[in-house]
Length: 436
Image (cartoon, rainbow, N blue to C red; front, top):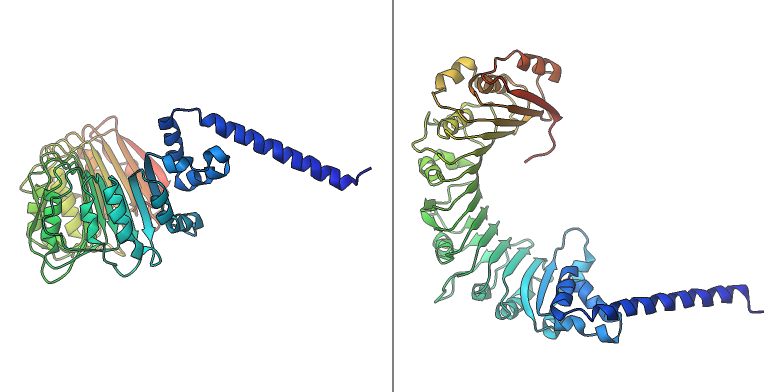
């Protein structure tokens, strides 16, 4: 009789052999699918798993090399060793698989940042459509070969220095999305950016987050994009934007710091009058800034307005009221409150009512106030909305980290406020989750 242990090992090996045979049979059955279906499956599982199919059987050993197009996406978030191995294998993949590169997305640390020049030269010739590159520290220079990607539809760059445009640059004729986050441009880079946007006639989505311009004072430059539908700008400074003929613009997100100090602010807002959705984050408006009581433009299409603000100083309150006066068809108002240490200006009911005009909030139906602290100015604003908005049906409230009175006392006070709409409901949602 053989030893009992050896019998178990033979049985285990037998089961493993049967499982491997079954897997190989299933894999070979997949090969009977039409090539375009099989390509779609391998593209969906990702390039790393597509290469691993080489181990299934002899018939699969080189199947991934026949892919008609490649999606190469490698994110280095956390300790993703798979992404690092994938970046290390890019040269081999591009050499063995001659198919079109549809997408190339990568987080590039110092190890691989130097390889991007050669990769761009290859994938630009392979008709890359979606390109997303995030670099590490130090603003490494982006190779000028990026401007040869003539078929690109989406370009996202972060953490790099963008080189000057090459002579004879004809633009990105198929570009629809341009995202620049924490990038640096050379001297007169504002005009370079103006040219990139102007020579992208199909551009629909433009996002500029903390774009840094070298040199001295930034000159005015034009954002002209007749098909632009969404605009996002985030900056601490007035970076000279001039909005021109954005007839297709539907939504905008604008976060600024000291731009409100400049006289161009009102003119800048007038370039957004066609939007139906607007998000404004006016950070750090000094107390001594004199805000207009009314804007010289009307947002006739605006249906949804989000404000990231506080009620502790006069300027942000005045700005909020100016926007409400200028948006006669507004239906939804969302206010996300970031807390200041103390309320230094009193905006009581008498002050707010003096600024109220006929037609304000005539179509307002939904109000959300997130991160409230129950300070007097916030309470006065809620009372104003409840007493004036005749079509209001929902007022949703959640509080922030620090509150100056108990929720019970605050809600009891709210219940005593008069309501212009018989259908208005006050919904308290407790503590707000992180929202900005």
